[in-house]
Amino acid sequence: MNSSDGMLIVNVSAIQAVAIAAVTYYFGAWLRKKVPFLEKYSVPSPVVGGTGTFLPGIFPFHESQL
Image (cartoon, rainbow, N blue to C red; front, side, top):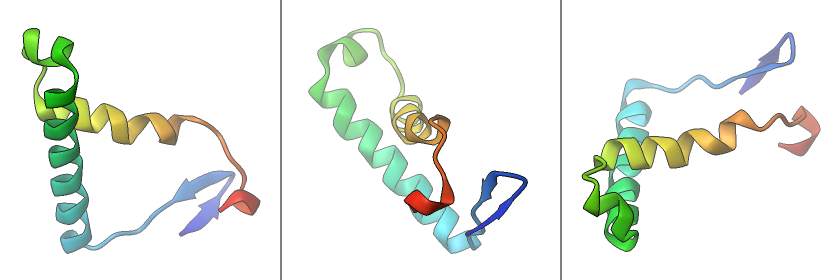
């Protein structure tokens, strides 16, 4: 990880990207089974998992907190 102009940049390989995508998908599938609202309205697992993965990234933090 490095920082450029206050923006955190994370470099990952292709294998790491696929692993992150798989974890995100299965997290979404698990969460969708736990929350009946998501299953009732047919929200796809990748959307649920992607939202759960995205939300922590929108909150600003400093490098000192890493």
